[in-house]
Amino acid sequence: MKKNLVFTAAIALFFGGAAYATNPSNNGTLALTGEVDGSIALQVLALESGGITLTGGGGTSAATAAIAPVSYYGTANNAIVSGFTKTSDSTHIILTGGFAVQVDKANITSSNYALTASVTSSDGNAWNLDTVNLTSSASTALLSGTSSYATPVTQTLIVTVPTSAAASTTAISGTVNLTATAN
Amino acid sequence: MTKPLVLTAATMLLFGAAARAAGPSADGSLALTGEVDASVAMIFHQHTLGGGISLDTGDGSGTATSSLSTVSKYGTPDGQSADGGNWTKTTQSDGFTLTGVVDVQVFKANNASSNYTLDATLQTADNLIWKINTASMVNGSETQLTTLGIYGGSRFATTIAIKIPNTEGAGSKSNTIVFTVTCN
Image (tube, rainbow over the protein chains, first blue to last red):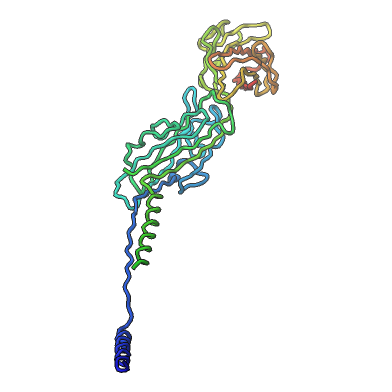
C-alpha cells in the first residue's frame, strides 16, 4: 500500500507539471450580421434666385413662409410679394412662387424619385403645385415622377384666392405636405 | 462559446430596429400663411350713350384725360362737337358752357361692402365754374355724387359742366377732377 501511494502521488505531479507547461488560451468568435435599408431624406430650400421667401426651416423638411398683405386692386399685377408674383384674373388673386425640394439618398440603387403632395388647409383657396391641384389626399406624382436626387428641383406653388373671400390676416393659411418615394 | 452567441443575437436585434426605422420615402412640408386685404378699383369709361365725351387716354383705367380742343363763344356753334371731344357747347349771355358725360365704374374684391360713396374734388382753383351732376364744385372741397354706388357691372354716369365766363381770358385751360370712392 505504501508503494502504491507513492506512485499515485507521482502521477499527480506529472499531470500537474504538464498543465503548467502550456500557456493558457481560449477561443471565441463574434459573428455579426445586420440589415441596412435604403433611405432618402427630403429638404425644402429657397431658390438660389427669386422664389418664395422662407421665413423658417429652409434646408430642413419643415419650412415656413408668410406672404405680406396683398390685395386684388391695391397690389399691382406682377408685383413681387414675399417672393410670390401677384397676378389676377377676373375673380381671383393669383400668387405664384417657387421653392426647391432636394431629396438625398443613401444605400439605395434608385435612380430617381417620385414626389407627391397634399395640402392641409381650409382657407377656401385653390392650391396648386406645378400643374397639380392639391387636395387633402396625396397627389399624382409631380414632374413626371422622375426627379433627380441630390439636386434642388424647383417646385412652383400657386395659391388662388377668390375675390369673394373675406379679407383677413389669415386668408391664406395652409401646409403643403410633400412625400418623396424612391423609384 | 455561449457568451459570443448571446452577443451575436443582441447585435442582430439592434440592426433590425434601425432598418425598420428607415424607409424608401421621406416627408416634408411648407407651411404658408398670408394676409389678403380688401380693395376697390375705380376706372373711367367713355359714356356710350348720349352726351359722352371722348377720353383721349385712360379709357378703362383710373387715370383718364379728355381734351376740349379749341372752342370759342362765338366761333364754335352750340351743340355737340366731334372736333371738341364730343363736349356739348351751350351759350349763355355771360359766357358759354361745355358739358360732357363720363362713366365711373367701381369694382371690389375681398370686401363685404354692399355699395360705395363717390366724391369728386376739383384739384386746382381757377376762374371757371365747374359743376358735376349739377352740384357746384368748390376747389379743395369734396362734392358728393352718390352714397349708393353699385359695384361691378353698373356704371355711374357723371355729367361735368364747365362754364367759361365772358371775363375769362383766352388761352389754354386745364384742371383735374379727383374722384374718390369709399366703401360703405
